[in-house]
Image 1: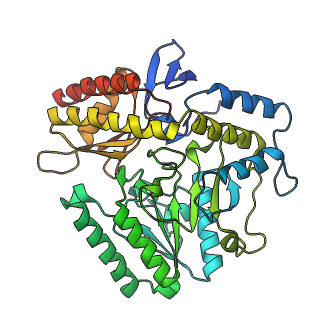
Image 2: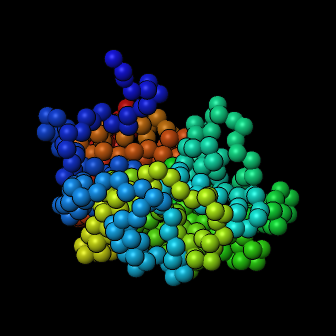
Length: 418
């Protein structure tokens, strides 16, 4: 009898039987508020009727139309529809299946287009678990441990973390940009540097938003040196942060945008967007893949984009995210073990620290488990596992937010009590 790998660790004890909206149900029909959204994937909630209908209809007509062999209408329609929401000038798409694949596609394009080799990534960033994407990842050593040597041509520089250093946002930005300038003087020449890759909000690294001034500083330096700027919007895209794209909290436009997760409400599809001029610099044969742009996933993505637009889910993410943070800050005020509540839109983290200010992963783990016992499903993140994150579907309403805050308050109290 075959079994799952023993290395796989389930974050909650739930055996899900079905999902509906913001809720998951186990085989005993116990209901759980799902504030994980499949790690930010079920953007329109579980089994949104319009997404289900689109996928069911597509399954009955064409499941797999391999898109470098034949073309199919759902992918053409999805690409046209993405044109309505992509930043101006990013008018060409290449599709794959996962965030990691899209990250690697962006690196391949950046290196081929510039003729340069080095990719500069930021400490705490998560870009995937495959060998290339893993080489860009420093959200925790578990992604990199035991598989070296890693892909060469990668350099790291600090991300502006205010809470960890006890700095103001301006101080953190000034430090991070100064360190980037130093990197370009001492480690990788601008003439050797193909791209900067950055998450608009650190994901696995602790749910830390990038200040607008930092992203704008990256854009200025990229323009000055002929370096490409890659926005990894795998988790922050499709409305998650209260803007359609996470980088839109600043004034920048990236050269390459990576999208995945919430794009198709749970169906595997990802892609990179770039300008026609940039995408045409990819070398022949460098873009392809068996399952990329799958017809059913494309139909689900098209329906997802329509739901996000028609139900005003980007605005809802901003509104409910503000309500969620307000509630969580009240809980934190009652429990000093939560050192900071932070995030953007419906991407919110609670950082647990000791009285000395060091990461408190043990209390975070107890709070996480206590929440699941009470019917609230959450995830942890951060290098020390001391940040409990909340990423509900974008359809969440005010009552569900308030319910989650109430359950979280009980869970933190239980965790603190030991």
